[in-house]
Each structure stands twice: as structure tokens, then as C-alpha cells.
Amino acid sequence: MAPPFPNVNPNTCTLGNSPTYSINVTKAEDAIAGVKFAKQHNIRLVVKNTGHDYLGRSTGKGALSLWTHNLKNIEFLDTYNSSKYTGNAVKMGAGVQGYDVLAAGEQNKKRIVAGYCPTVGVVGGYTQTSGFSALSGAYGLGADQALEWEVVTTEGEHLIASPDKNSDLYWALSGGGAGAYAVVISLTAKTWQDGKVAGAVLNLNHTLSDAFFAAFAEWQTQLLTLNQLPGFQSAFQTTQTTFAINFISWPGHDSSEVRKVLTPYTDYLKAQNLTYNLALSDDTSYWTHYERYEEDLPLRPLLHLRRHHQPLDSAESCRDQRRRPHQRLPRDPC
Ligand SMILES: Cc1cc2nc3c(=O)[nH]c(=O)nc-3n(C[C@H](O)[C@H](O)[C@H](O)COP(=O)(O)OP(=O)(O)OC[C@H]3O[C@@H](n4cnc5c(N)ncnc54)[C@H](O)[C@@H]3O)c2cc1C
Image (cartoon, rainbow, N blue to C red; front, side, top):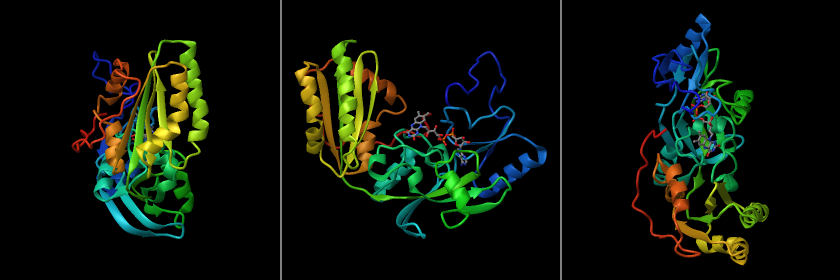
């Protein structure tokens, strides 16, 4: 649950803003029963998946909650046919999280446009409010992947929404807002052929100087060109002591190409006498690339910052490019 919404007061035993009662939804009939009960008794109804919602829309004081977290089925489909799409697809239960389906994708040699954050629910708020991924540069937003939604409506009907059937509902759910139109039971989404992915991180240690701010501004300028490269995607952050390109993902490319397209920026840093650390990577699948940059859950964000604070041995170093032993990420860290 996002920090402002759980009841964190250690001195009370009250529920705070949490729902009064939750149904563990394991099949459509559970959601139908919940919707009908809430309607009959005029009770506030909320749908909760992982609880990542920044605005607390998956919780609600006094509500009946439909908890979709345990709908974890994942089925890869060799062919999915509709008037809009023919190709590979994956059917995901509403509780599937990013790392569930990305790891399963590797086994099936497929990529799925899940979020940067491994614990966000793919089918819940992510796809229903558009969904931004390290693969968005290559394949578009999460909502662009939606082929059909299996839902329970507010009338308690169990139906499919696709571009061909119940199309208004399909378009509303595909990026139009979460938890508002129906209770989603599963989503069938596009998959993409897996293969090599090049990556990089760049850390720039600094004190709050004009040269640092100029380097930060220069990165924004460079992005105008880099973002034109098909499939190229990056994320950055800055703190009081570092500017970091957290990761670059470039599916279908090699690290030598990443180095090349970053050269105008690294040349700029060298010319300004700014110390930086560039680490490049090559992986054979999206999952191994993703795991490389999303390791150490659930503490990854903190460890990531700590790494940025470590002293640098050299101006530029290459990361160990051997594949690390496959580590399954711990479940449910959030
Ligand atoms: C740490 C963190 C990292 C994030 N990283 C990314 C990222 O990389 N990319 C990105 O695009 N976004 C990211 N987000 C934002 C995230 O996508 C949204 O917060 C999203 O709403 C979370 O969806 P959820 O289903 O996991 O969470 P929940 O809080 O459980 O649900 C969010 C909303 O979806 C509704 N909902 C959930 N399940 C269903 C269902 N089965 N049927 C109908 N409605 C449902 C809820 O009612 C609520 O309105 C991040 C958020 C956090 C907190």
C-alpha cells in the first residue's frame, strides 16, 4: 500500500482508511458476488491489486474490497486473432505482477511490456492508466498491448471487452482509468519475440556546482536526439550528490552501439573535467537485462542510491558482462 494510506499509527487498533472487509477474488464468481452484495446494501466498493496506487484509489474507509492479487494465472498463446491483431499473446490473471510475467516470458522466449517497477500489477492500474515500460520506446505503452479484457461489470455481468465486443468498455479500460469501469479478471496482451538487449548506467558524482547543472541540462539536450533512436529508452534521477542515468535499455542492439550514441555526452563530460562512471551491458534476453538493473529487491532503490555514493576508481569502467546466475526475485516485497 502506498505510504500515505495504510494505518501506520502504532497506538491504535482502528482500520483507518482501510476497507472494512475484503474478498479474496480467485474466480469471476467471487467478484460477481461482491459487486451484487455492495449494490444491494449500498456499500462503497473498491478494487485492490498490489496497492501501488499513489492516490489511494485501491483502498477506502468503510468499503468492501475486491482483492485480485491471487489471480496469478499466466498463459502464453501462439496465435491470437482479432480484426485488429494476429500474433502471439499472453493471457494474464488480474493479480500478475511485472516480475511474474517477465520471468515467464523468458521461459517462452517472449517479451511483455510490463513496468519499470517489478511489483506493479500489469493488469490493474498499470495498463488501465496507460503503463510506461523500459520497452515503451520499442513497443509503445502498456495500454497499446491490450487485446481483450475479461471483466465483471458493475451490473455483475461476466463478459469480454475487445475492439470487436463491448468496444466502449475495451477503450475505456485501455488507458482510460483504473477501478472505474469494471472489475478486471484477466487481460490478454501482445507479446514480442525475445532476443538481445543492450544496456548501460552512468553515474556522475558532483557537488552542487554550475558545471553539474550544465551537465544535467546537456543530458536533456542529448535526449532530444537519443529518444529518436527506435527502441532506445532511458531513465534518470538526481539527488544532492549525484546525477544518474539509472538505466538505458536498447532491445536488439549491442553495448558498443550504446557507447557510440553516448559518446557526444561522455565527450562533453570529459571536456568539462567531470568524473563519471559508465557501465555497459549485453544480455541475451529482456529478463536478464531487467534483472541486472532491478536486482536486490526489495531494497534495490536504497542500494542503488548507495552505489551512486561510492568513490570511483576510474573515469570509465565496464561492468562484468557475464550473466549472473539466474536469481528469482523475492515475491511480494511491497
Ligand atoms: C514503486 C512504484 C513504481 C511504479 N513504477 C511504474 C512504472 O514503471 N511504470 C508505470 O507505468 N507505472 C508505475 N507506477 C505506477 C503504477 O502503475 C500505478 O500506481 C498503478 O495504478 C498500480 O496498479 P496496481 O494494480 O498495481 O495497484 P493498486 O493500487 O492495487 O490499483 C491501482 C488502481 O487500479 C485499480 N485496479 C486494480 N486492480 C484492478 C482490477 N482487477 N480491476 C479493476 N480495477 C483495478 C484500483 O482500484 C486502483 O484504482 C509505479 C508505482 C509505484 C508505487
